[in-house]
Length: 291
Length: 324
View 1 (cartoon, helix red, strand yellow):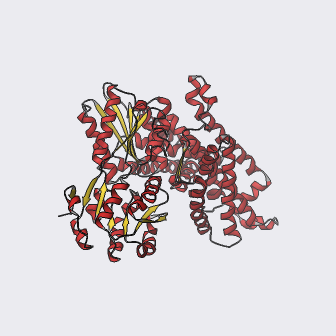
View 2: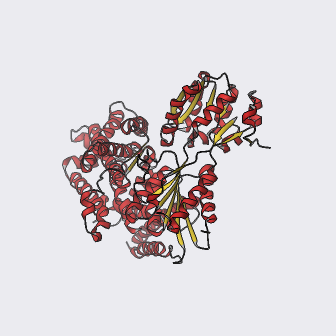
View 3: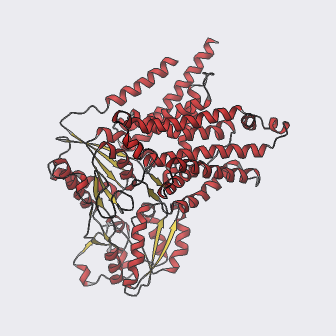
């Protein structure tokens, strides 16, 4: 069960990294994610069936996600449509695109070699085979996180952060605020699509409805993570988002394990979130008293 | 404050570890149901009854752990990751639940028994030759399309076009829709299918569909069935009868249906599960089963509304389910 939480938490952690950019850094409520998550999955599933090495399909999924972000950014910046609405437009359009790419609403890849189940992982000794999926997911997530950390330290990364905090800084630096936003949306949706592609490889099927609620999961993860560790200045916000995602999945898993009525599961999950957030607030109060 | 966080976290871990403490001599069966609606609930009840018939009785030698994913894919996957390791068998109801369960169960050799899967081959839960890809088997609820067409022809001798409304996101529509298209000409019908992406599109889709057709026939589409009241009202105003795909729809006002008995489908599934539990056969050795005989359900009030009469040869096998 702990294994399941970590696997799922880290996969959705990549998604949380993407939402960290749009929601925390750019302050852009990007609804594209509900469709770019299954977009990454659709691309990965179809290409895997076509015989492409699964690792390469992840990359293709990311490119597709970046394109989705580009579309949202273009609609918002160039067509001057409100942020929320431009995300909704892309999300709506992508639903059809996803169905076209996948060919049907549900594409199983049980029969083919996937990233986590192939001749290599089958040859591994038992003691490591149980953890091979987790290790691979951890590796992918950490690479995504470290690259994002590095990027945020570059000049382009600083501009990205400035675009969300104080847009006039970007303009003062003689940079186009719009293109900075578009780049941010592209990176964010590439990460979201990567999460979708990894999820598809792990669960071994694509389903058109797998994106429903993605935005909520990602946002909750980012908020839980950043609230809980608000005062730990040494901790990077990307780390907070990843931990937030694992905690989110732990809450869901706990709600499932409590063996309560199935109908009440979401309620229990909500109460657990609240507990975590309240705990985070209690922490801040205490700091203020000390000060 | 760190302490409080640590406390909460450790409490969560403790709860997580303590909850599956169950007696050793009990057989633990995890049931993963994808959505909550009449047909699937009947499958589940039937499954439990079917096992009981074979001596596996809840509380005596079997413990059921029922989880419902409420149509959420991410939750279905997570439920599977939690339930599979602590279950001796998984019963998966509806396609996404079965796929999620099989993904986790394949390595652990936990048998998965599925039910209410329209197309096990298309969902990669069965091989094209009818064998199973692992410790997994179950029952399919493929619609009795031919019987339905035959019935519509008998009730509406002059009808030419049948309208079918379906949601593009549900895979369980693909196979029956193909069958409709293939078999319709045999009975002199033409199918006008209209795909929509969400329930909210139904009124618009019906506005364009109803004038083109003589009647509607439903698939087991979860969304369309959820919006049935609206479909019936709009079709009624247009004077076009609606044929259902199972008993519950006829009770609600569809004229008639050649439907499956989901309770019976569940019982059949439960008996298959019992075979595996008794060790008579491995799940991988039992081919998946279809329910072949359909039941004719009719609603006399709806029939009278459209001036449809039940031919004598159908009357003796018709089950009148008109609400009193």
